[in-house]
Amino acid sequence: MIDLVEDTRSTPLFRLGAQPIALTAVALFLLIAGVTSIAIWRAYTGSAPETDRVVASRQLQARTAQASEQLVEKTKGLEATQQESIDQLQVVQDQLQTVKRLLAAQQADTKRLSEQVASLNESIDGLRQSFASARATEAETPSVTRRKPARYRHASARKRSRG
Image 1 (cartoon, rainbow, N blue to C red):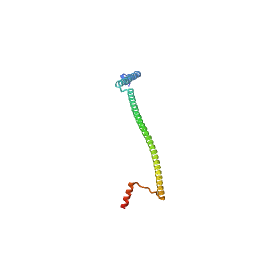
Image 2 (image 1 turned 60 degrees about the vertical axis):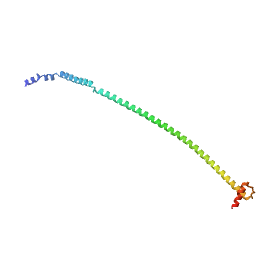
Image 3 (image 1 turned 30 degrees about the vertical axis):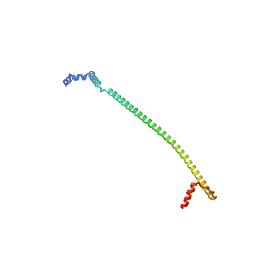
Image 4 (image 1 turned 180 degrees about the vertical axis):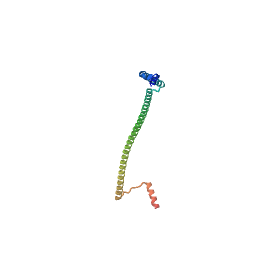
């Protein structure tokens, strides 16, 4: 059995296991070499996480700027539309004021004309009454015979002869 123990100690792997510092140093070296090779590979291929984050943040900034510009353009468009609406409303209000003034003037003219018509009706009624009273007065008083002009006398004479 002693021979077996000595045979296992003479193998190279067993010798490495006996020296833990050397084994740790080799493992550390392999780990550092692997990490370094991965970092170099990512740096040259451009797929490093930092680069991806920078690119993503720049894209986000570009999208934000584009959205901002679109909002500014839409806001300017809304301002223009709102100003046009305000101008149109002002024109409509001016037209409404003009129509109100014209309507008031027309109503005043209508009132004035209706007062004139009423005054004329009163005058006509007064003339009718005075004409009626004049006829009544003529009927009550004997009429003074007036002589008709010669031409009317002949016409009335012809009428009598015919009738």
